[in-house]
Structure formats: structure tokens, C-alpha cells
Amino acid sequence: MRYLLTSEQMKTCDSTEIEHYGVPSIVLMERAALSVRDVILHRYAQASNILVICGSGNNGGDGFAVARLLNMAGRRADVLFVGKHDHMTQETAKQAEIFSRHGGTILPDESGVKGYDLIVDALFGIGLCREVIGRYADLIHAVNRSDTPVVAVDIPSGISADDAHVLGCAVRADITVTMAFPKLGLMLYPGAQYCGEVIVSDIGITAAGLKEDAVISLESSDLPALLPARRRTANKGTYGRLLLIAGTRNMAGAACLAGRAAYRSGCGLVCVYSHEENRVILQTSLPEALYAPSTDSLEHWLDWADAVAVGPGMGQSERSLEVLTQVLLQWTGPLVLDADALNLMAAHPELSAENAASAIVTPHPGEMARLLNSSDPEGVQISDIVSRPVDVARQYAARTGYVTVLKGARTVISDGEETYLNLTGNEGMATGGSGDVLTGIIGSFLAQGMGALDAARTGVLTHGVAGDEAAKKLGTRSVTAGDIADHIPYALHPGADA
Image 1 (cartoon, rainbow, N blue to C red):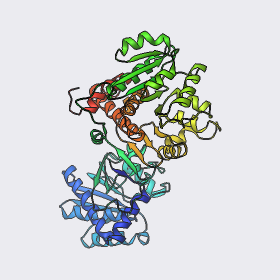
Image 2 (image 1 turned 135 degrees about the vertical axis):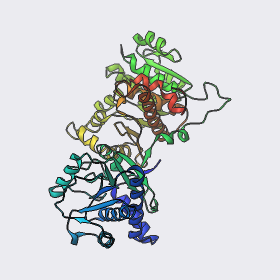
Image 3 (image 1 turned 90 degrees about the vertical axis):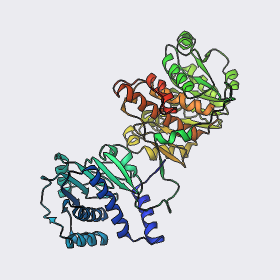
Image 4 (image 1 turned 180 degrees about the horizontal axis):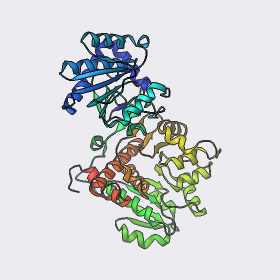
């Protein structure tokens, strides 16, 4: 897990290092330049003719220092400075002076980018907040049109460090060397598509002074430490009983996928409460599970369960509404709400999970829009949710008290105070039933006794890693939801033979 910082948060850490600890800014700049130089010397050993594009901010100062250090290492590195010299920051002006004293070449502003083995992008840094236009935009387009590899310093120029938006246009980098901490804009989309490989360089800046509201990454290496413990003396009751309310008439697939995922994630017992006509399919496809027809006493199974997951494939019929209403009124334990449960809640704003000890909601952007617009159908557009998922998830969690799992290419998990961004998963997981698998995983971890936030973040991470394992074997075009469920064991047991 690592902090993913906005520009303001990074500036806070930077200022704390300079003002509180007394490390001069020029020293930090020199460390940053050394780290970029080292990456270039290692990754582009054959690049002898290098162009460093610098702006007037401190990112440009990093660039001047990189060019000087490359020249000292025996490469030729020219600087193309774009901007006004009198607009340079104090540190950048100093680095430009040092570069010139070392005999470095500063090209005329109108120079092109052709004829080089490598381009270093130090035009704009993390503070950019306006659209890139004019000569800057022309230069970025020229860089992107070239076939030359690009190394970006801290962030590709034109990407917002805060929300990953492309500010008019942006450099497409092959490698981004970012300082101290990954930036949020490098991990969200579309920014993640522009940064190439991200290398985080330790330049001696700590998290001192950083507020606790920073987003935290979830990566595959984090999973082993998050998983609940297993005991050799355990029995099937040790690992929890999950009541899965899923599957309306002729919609057994969602229930099968969620139930299989729950078992694969370590749940001891799963009961699927589903339409009577789904009995044969469920008992054939998921013989490990208990089955309860939806005409059976729901109260009995609520008394039996340690956790409840409701929604996959259940439909929005009057009977489904009755079942959901009964769950929300009577259930006082941990709860996962997904799919049609969310759609029913959006259609009936009077429904609430306030009686549950903890509730997790798992909407995709369309479902989140319906939840947010339950009283105002024109209030929030799906595009607004996709463009600022961290803010939407955090605010919804804070307002409702539900742990919110806002699904997407980068799924966000938040309880309103702590917020996580999942960096695992792939485009192959954009397939029908994938969300049902996630519901089963999260429900399983709840049944095993994990708290809501822990179950949500561990479930999302398990789901993403399982999807990556499936894609390694099958390719992203061929992954199905069932493949994700079947690869959960390889997510939970790294190194197992898939």
C-alpha cells in the first residue's frame, strides 16, 4: 500500500521537508535529477543524443539538472526551453545557469524534436491546472508524433495530478519517473494511459505533514497481509455462514457465480436463497451450497446467517422488493448490497440499510447515478461519476455511512474517511457476471468475520488479482466471470500452478 497524492498533498510533503526539516529545495531537485539520470542510463544505455524539454517551473529545473548530469555521464543532452526566462522559478533559473556554465546547449525556442534518441519531458509538473495551448500544445503534439522514446519527469506534461484529466493535450510517455510518491493522476484513467511504466523515486521526502485523507493504493503484493487467518483446528462453521439472496426466475447464473466465488474465497457455508425454478441449476452447478427456495421463510435463514449478500440477478419485481425490504428491516449483521438491490433502493429512496451493523454497496457508475439521482433524475451524469470516482465514492460513503465500492477500471473503496484505489485487474474483467463474483468474494470475507472496510478492500483486491491471473492464462479477450471465480485460488495462493 502506498499513498497516492494530489498536487496539493505532494506540495505539503515537499514544503515540510524544506521548511520544517531544512532540506534546501535545490538539494531535492538534484536528487530528483539523479534518479531520472539513473533510469535513463540503465533503461536507455544506447541513447547518446538526448533532448530535454524544460518549462519555467520547478519541473523544468529538474530537466536542466538531468541534462547536465547526462552530459557529465558522457551523453549529449540538449535543452529545449519553452517559456520566458523571467518567469523561471528561483531554483530553475539556478539550474539553467549551472547547465550553461557546464557548457550545455540551450536550443532556440522554435527548435524541433527530431534527430534525438530519447526525449525527456520536463515541460510541466504536477501543478498544472489549466489547458495546454499555443506553442506548448504544438510541442507536445510534435513529441507524440515522433517515434522517439519519452521519459517524463514526475508526470507527463498535460495530465492533471489530481484527477488524471488530459488538460487539452498530454505527452505520451514510455516511462514516468515520479518523485517520492505516486500521484493520483498517474493511477486513474485516462492519465494512466499516458504515463507508461511508473517508477517511484525515493528522493528523501517523507509523509510528514500529510493529512489522513490521502488515497491509498491496493496492489497485488498487499493481498497476503489482508487475508483472514486460517486455523488447522477449524471446522466449516469457523469460516462463516453467508446467506446469498440472488437469482430471480431463470436467472440462476448470477447466484452460481457469486456462490462459487464465496466458497473459493474461503467461506465455510453458503446458502443460496433463490427462485424455485433455479433449484436444479444451482444444485447441479454449486452442489456445495445449501439451497432455499424464495418461498421459504426468509426470517429463518436470516437467523442462520453470519453475513448477507443480496442483489445479483434478483430482478426488480414486487417479490424482490418484498424480500429486500424484509432484509433491510430485520437484518442487523454485516450486509452487501449489489445490482438489483441497489436499483430497488434507488427506485424506493425510503429504503435504508441503517439497521445493519455495517453495509457495503457495490455500484458501477450507472447504478451509482441512479442512487444519487433517486430524488432528482437529472442530477448527476454517469460521465461525472467516471471522471471523479474518488470524490463520488468518498462523498457518498460519508453521507450514507455505507462502505462504498465504486466499480470501474480503477475501483474506489471508501468509508468516508479512508479511501483506497485498486490498481489490479484488467480490461478482460469487463464481462457479464464479473460484479456477481465480486459480491460473492466480499460476502465471504464478511461471513469470515472481517469488518466492512477490510472485507471490501480485500474483496476488491482478490477479485482484481484473480482477474489478472485469468488473463495471464487465457488472454484478456477470453476471460469470463467464471474464469475469474476459478482463478481466486491462484490469487489467494501466489505461486500455485494455474
